[in-house]
Length: 422
Figure 1 (spheres, rainbow, N blue to C red):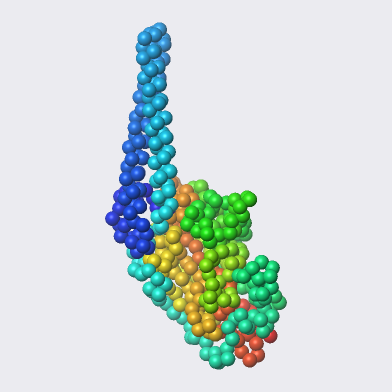
Figure 2: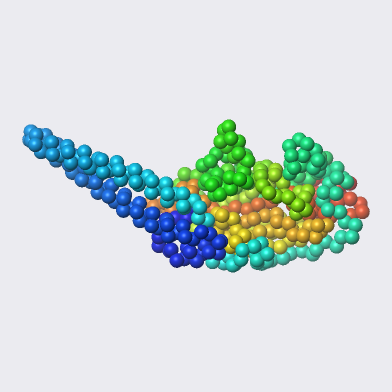
């Protein structure tokens, strides 16, 4: 959530930057006007309470002096002030509610490095690595390979739950487990502390990281208990630090965690979501940082390169995109997407997003840090997929298919225990 003082002091800048996200910038002037009314009303309440305090002191003096007339006058004045305070306090509550309702609808302002653009086609390719796989015309997409080798049963998942909930079997299940352990080991070696968070969160957690009220329709809601299945481990891991004041010397905080993730993906259909391309339940290892504001963009580049290193080790051709304003998430200030090339489908598949949220999440979370005796200030938060499994598996299966089976990249073999899927 954007800070009110930022909008008050940088109105034109906020409009300019939010225009990149095609946001409803007219909310900014409404917010500034409501905030002015709120502050005026608060000042009136504070002034009246000050007068009431003076009257209370006078009341004590008149009581000692047995000044009945003075006591009666003060009682009447105090009653009038209390009524005014009650009326103004109700107005203040209404203004606060209106202000909050508008503030939560404003997305984060994008960094000035974010390119102009409205669609994914306008994202900027900033880096490419690896050679495209040279597959024969008879190469199969991963859903056919999964059936041929008995790795993934999409129909059984449909029977047990519904579309988008596959069942992994045999070497397919071992490949999943191998990737999870590989990603976790690499993250801990890079200085991330592994945590195992809950996969259900409350509304406060959903609000803290920006999923609520923006993405209710994309999350599975357990209505009886009013809890949400997490769309990513970012939500519970970042919320560990909700309502926390850290010491400056504790920064940066680096956490990683594996969880299943759940997304309704309402309206998703067609060839682009076939097989593992888009699921309602999938596994992912997430990396999260809480950073000093002066170092958060350096950390973003470090996280981007870290994910690139994972893809290099998996021997997958990939490219890095800097997302344009119109394709960014609600809460992000700047995002890199990583895409791998899927040989049989002949298309790029997104496998990771690495984002800096600056103070947008920490303002909602009330996540601050303090240097010495200074006043606490908001920290910056960042996260990234490192990595999401389904499309990684899709690309591994498709790009490494041979006459002798599906080759496992060398870095992964200590985790799978086999060199080929046969």
